Amino acid sequence: MMSSVTTTSGRYWDVTQLSEDLGVPKTWIYDRTRNDGPGVIPHLKFGKYVRFDPESDAFQQWLKDHEFGVGSGLNDQPALQAIDIRRRK
Figure 1 (cartoon, one colour):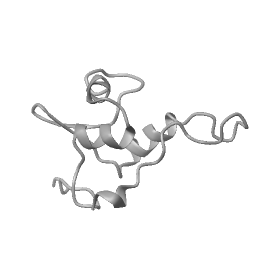
Figure 2 (cartoon, rainbow, N blue to C red):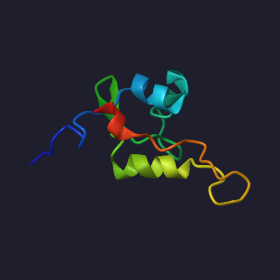
Figure 3 (cartoon, rainbow, N blue to C red):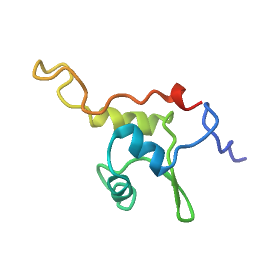
């Protein structure tokens, strides 16, 4: 049996929502959904539509993998701040 097609907060994000939250162009997001391999943003495709589940373990790990300088003493701020998923409800 297939699981529900919603996140805990009730919906997936589209490219526009993710690009706004990360502060990057939509083309940057699309580029990271077209290829396989390191750096690909975990996503779902429904035909031509790309969606993201910000609550998924894979997506959260992708964010963690892109943090810079955390605990290094050089820069204790992550390059990508964790997305506040509660804001989208």
